[in-house]
Image (cartoon, rainbow, N blue to C red; front, side):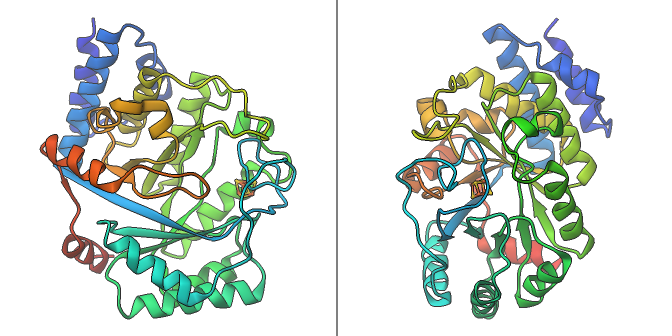
Length: 338
Ligand code: SF4
């Protein structure tokens, strides 16, 4: 019966678009044997579209904490009582220095991230634009930003300064969103993604799992991202942080996480699917299996407010599996095509 996963993978490799009901039925995999077969079918789709290449991305936390929003999982929200480090926007020189440092860790896509609903302070916008202008002249790396909900005018200004890709997660399914945030709407998030796409920016948009969403809502989210035609999908898995409303959420099991990664590979077969926050705590020694489950990208280095894994271990996993990190020269080529 588990050959159905490979039959569906064959259809997808031949250009078929899976339906929501078919995707939901894939998530019925329950026994380890079924889940391994499901992952191996997702691996075939990854291998067909992405060959042996893994993209490494990294982030810079340029403005931390004191956020007006109440996202239930986030220790940067001013609504929650956490011990997160808070600071205002760092200088453009500091951003450039950290950017160059992350390049030495094989990251070919580097994002500047700020806390808050949206980066609208003119001084802050000038700082990040100055950083992008400096980086534009010296770095062949994909320049990414995650500045929250933004209007077209500011996105255009960022693009002009040298931004390639905008990161903005949907966070969770529309039907579940009110459970994780009430200070802004799912629609505001989706609109920012549509605007970024409309002006020609690449878009990286994904979600966080383990918030209490159902399998059906995971499928709903995957199809929403397919409809938005995002270029890259970062998958995060809850690392419950003390002082946040999600601090007592039950962690997802590694097999549950692999089912989610494989789901996204089946629904978005030719997109970049990355695994980011929460992999160390939730997957432990099974982290290399993210690639077998269908991922072709990984975030390296530290996360916004928590420590990440040693990049050398990620590079070793990639090499041991017969895969290879995307090289800067390849990235320059990809960027020049866009
Ligand atoms: S996820 Fe972003 S918008 Fe939500 S509380 Fe954290 S920093 Fe603010």
